[in-house]
Image (cartoon, rainbow, N blue to C red; front, side, top):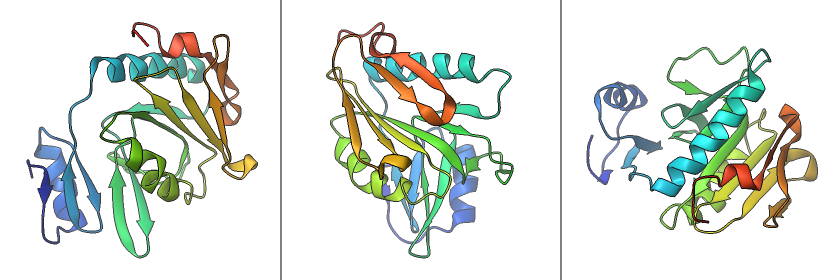
Length: 187
């Protein structure tokens, strides 16, 4: 399944089996498979900083943080969709599959020039339809900007850009300063 896009209808079973063997990760949208590009240094620092902070915070609490290789599975207009969010916090007892989750509480995407439009539109619309999702976070890697969407605010954005501000995930009782998110980057 390596390549930019695999045309034609691929079954969910073939997609999942192919992902176990493939060195390249692919997202799946209704039978079409799309290869994912590699990530930048900034992307990796940001994702790792968030992973470390979330992992430490969740130790001994319900919920687990997943990074990079865990898929989220959705059903949109009778089509199966699999995305790879950069970070996901899940812990719903209904999630029993080892390779994907259906009931995340928090999803985080680190934006790149190639993915920002998809993350802000397509994934926003897809993710906010998940019954268990409480917060969706977009983290820019080329500027110091974090956009937080919360279910209880009817998915209205809260944009964080100022020194001293912190990302607060109410669903996890978690707070992390922007400085910590961007630690190790030149942003």
